[in-house]
Length: 428
Image 1 (cartoon, one colour):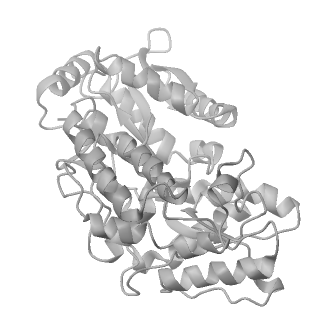
Image 2: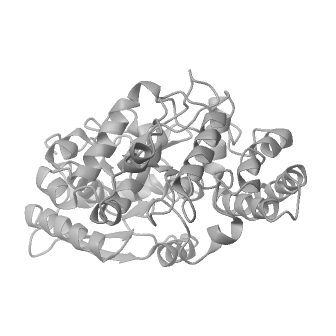
């Protein structure tokens, strides 16, 4: 990135101590260090071997261009990664730079584990709106690596084969239910128009926002909807379950669960970048994929927002904040690094990276979709509470009892509220 790193002007607490130590060691002109005596920083992320390969290539390029900085890298799969980081929180032994998952941002940032980045990382080149989900309590504590937006991924070839029109933006949840039933009837045994979407708390949040509400209160300390609303949401797909228009709970729980990627479901609501993972399987078998806006409770309010596919953060315990910031700026803004990383972490969050990435057909489809719904984008919801992961798991677990007929939607809603209150209290 051509612009220089902006310096922090006001720091407090452990962040100030770390930054002051770094400034003393590094001087005003940037990180001290030579090829023979470099400053050292650590960088960790979750992902597979393919992500590790391109990330290490980009980091190697960074070290070639910044011989005074040595970067030690490490990665793991998602569960092991977070088990390691949460275990290291108490001792403040976090990597200088690490990859953050948005639902965990408050868990780390709310506990003072992350360094504010407002005057440390240059944010001038970020695409409009992508930083909205990176602030907590008025401070920028993360930067998005890539972005995604909710969408309805579908099979255009199946729609065309059976003469079923693709809905236009603004269609309702009732319209969607009717579409699923129509598709299932046309597709025949072993294929469905869609799956039961009401077990997703993220889709419930979308539905609430479309009605002017939200899942969490503004301070993320409580739920912000009623038991009656939840019971209504959990009842939306019940008629489709009753007549077999969506996979049964047993089919959905099977090892090879039905879905768009499995070639057995015509539509699926996901973050748009999921289409990249589906693309090879579907196209190699001769199928096609498309993406449109999801259904809405209000045609004038789709309540879509840019969400970070993942974020980069700097630990508050870092003794080298400026070299850490320089690494982040390089990975997100250097044209050569962007070309190496491609869309592995989603559609790039900076204009510089986006201009440097060679988009494949799937990524171009996602980018075109995001451009098409840009006029419908709203502000991001509040950063989820530290208990968000447990609340999401409980949401899905309790809804399964509705699916299996063990509880009514109203009974399940009462239970969820009780469990959620306990989870919120445990985070106090």
